[in-house]
Amino acid sequence: ATLATDLRQAWRENQFLIDYQPQVGADGRMSGVEALLRWRHPHRDLVAPADFISTAEETSLIIPIGRWVLEQACAQLAEWARRPDRRHLSIAVNVSVRQFRHPDFVDEVMTAIADAGIAPHKLKLELTESLLAEGIEVTVAKMGSLKDMGVTLSLDDFGMGYSSLSYLKRLPLDQLKIDKAFVKDILTDANDAAIARTIIGLAQSLGLSVIAEGVETREQRDFLAQQGCLEYQGYLFCKPLPIEELEQFIDRQA
Ligand code: G
Ligand code: G
Ligand code: MN
Ligand code: NA
Figure 1 (cartoon, helix red, strand yellow):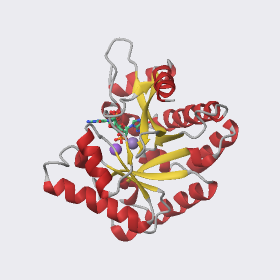
Figure 2 (cartoon, rainbow, N blue to C red):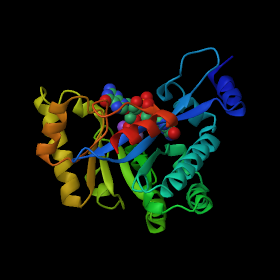
Figure 3 (cartoon, rainbow, N blue to C red):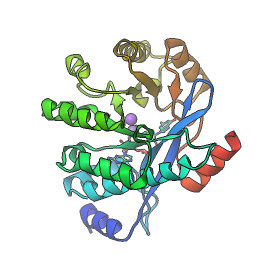
Figure 4 (tube, rainbow, N blue to C red):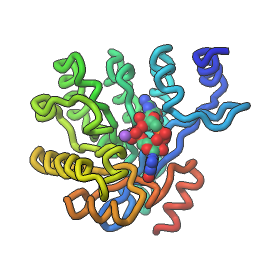
């Protein structure tokens, strides 16, 4: 069977899961999590999103799958909202270009938030720079609608794409996310260090928060902190976990 056929079956048979990876502030406290889609194929190891997201986009399956991830995230936020030790947590959801471009996307986000009855700012949407490749006016307008709703907007994989800086200042963003490609060798590669420093400076001058992903060592974290990046995600703190294990992680932190 082709990957597309397998994916359709996987969707019908509920083979998708969500792992959650903590995002941590300068004080080491969790501020939220990123929802990361997983495909539990019955006869294969866990299939990585990198190996199926593009097919999900091509087949449009990303539309129902993406909606499901949004609904799951909002339901989880509603559950956490009832618990004093968890109600500060946010959930970041990755949004693919195809999904964002769908005419119903803004309505779906609004419905998911309303149905779950959550505070909109607890939902963080991770958008990518590829949205800027075409249709900038529509992109700015849609982001504006999401922003007006109160949703938090983060630009994922920042630095990997072709963001024009003149577009960047027009986007109603809350956060830039430094791609793990720049964090990996930040201590040894002067260019990566310079890029990370530039992104942090850019975020500061645009009044945005900044988070680094792929933080694996204390030294990377300390370097980023020195440069003014005060939020982190990576194996140093916690790998992506199934919800039950994440709940245990949160309990151990408390
Ligand atoms: O966990 P990692 O291998 O887990 O994820 C790889 C990439 O897959 C992430 O950088 C992210 O861009 C993408 N991804 C993960 N979950 C989702 C999802 O729910 N929707 C979309 N569109 N992309 C996702
Ligand atoms: O959406 P996005 O690319 O930002 O998702 C983050 C990806 O990074 C996921 O695939 C996740 O599994 C992965 N990841 C999370 N923490 C680390 C880390 O510390 N090191 C590396 N190499 N990858 C990480
Ligand atoms: Mn992401
Ligand atoms: Na990323």
